[in-house]
Image 1 (cartoon, rainbow, N blue to C red):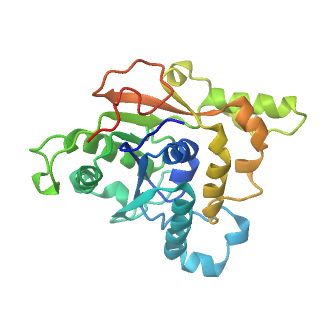
Image 2: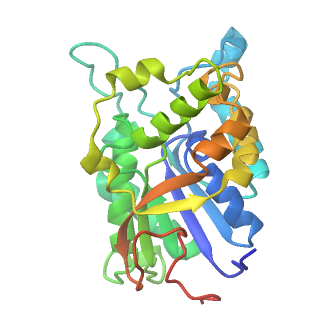
Amino acid sequence: MPNRAGLRLMHVHAHPDDESSKGAASTARYVAEGAEVHVVTCTGGERGSVLNPRMDRPDVLENITEIRRAEMDAAREILGITQHWLGFVDSGWPEGDPKPPLPEGCFGLVPLDEAVERLVRLIRSVRPHVVTTYDERGGYPHPDHVRCHEVSVAAFEAAGDPERFPEAGPAWQPAKLYYHHTFNRPRTQALHDAVVAAGLESPYAERLESWTPEPEWDARITTRVECAAYFGVRDQALLAHATQIDPDGAWFAVPLEIAQEAWPTEDYELVVSHVPTTVPEDDLFAGIETPVA
């Protein structure tokens, strides 16, 4: 097992539960190898829908802010991470045609520099060598995910510039920036095919029928981190977010052994590297020497 002591990884996510649904198994692997992993959660998830029927109760809905924080605490302990709240309010998922305006004061409407300064302050304090976030589509078009992308990319660039946000601490330039590509079509197809081959019903059949292939998008993946041994840890972290994750739902419809065999990696796109590296990679820390100050 590699020794990652002295290396620091920062994931920037929109809501509590995103850290468990995207990149959690590779997070668990790096923690086990001695890296320091930080998760920044931009919002409290206050406007998130309750997606687990067992939790769709008045007492849960009335206390959703506190409950989602407690769920994040539980997931944090399972993953072995340090977690930071950026302190913004969930924008919610706008529904309707046309979609209504976002609620006043939400993360999606916060002036960009205000959010960037908060994240720059954290980056300069934690001094991560690697930062991950979402692609320009947000992974999916939730306004908080798109805003998370915008804030993360801007903060990655600004953190190393001593003239930007000088009161946010001494400049620190992370070495690498990645986008998550967890839910890519080739992975979904591979899981579907493996489930069908095992004689089971696939939870992905309908999704794949309506999913237009984008080979040029899938080709953006540069880095596949082997982490199948930690899929169980990922699943436990997901289950900690009980308001969001239905234990009888599609998240767990593929048996663990089949998932580990069919697609044993979590996938990323290397966007910026200030250290020499060659793609394809199998490690987010590729090219970064250890220990690093």
